[in-house]
Length: 193
Image (cartoon, rainbow, N blue to C red; front, side, top):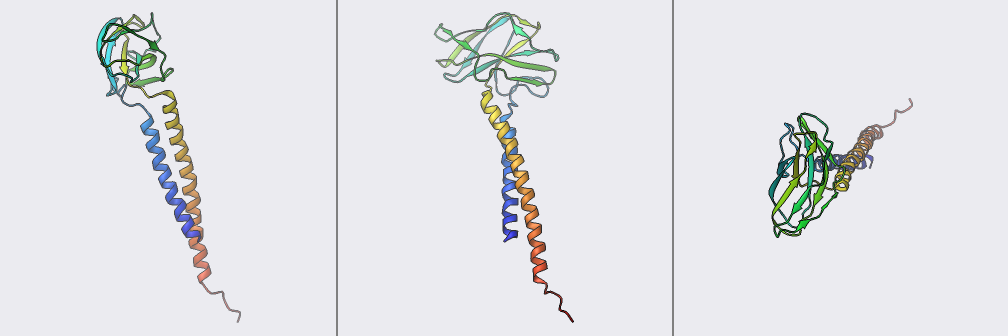
């Protein structure tokens, strides 16, 4: 019986560790700034500060503005708010967004979220970026996961790894103990002579 319970716990522990690793890795947004400091796959557009750009945005999908500083300098601030105009010429409200407080680094660049927009209409939007400190900064428009989903995925993944390790360790001890106990029980006791 101990062998079966130990084997089951060992298998459950292994599954939990794999699920934990997958959750942890999937929660990290690798598609924003690459290891070389270039914009990643989740970046919709890059607009230098100060300047304006026309960007194709999808309706009802939040796009975050990340102030990205060059050469390892810390991104400080924008001189004023980012402004966005929709395809119909109407202003689009810029909000803190669900990824407020998010920051990321890659290569010789680091960035932090300075706002977000959830367009009502799909189409070409005009994005005006004010001057930034430090000079030479850029703003990446990217699909950033919400801070809550990032934290949930990361902590859920770490929890899965820890629980899986504990279950696997307990399963290993029960499996070995069951095998030893089974081997000892099968040997007949020595007879007194």
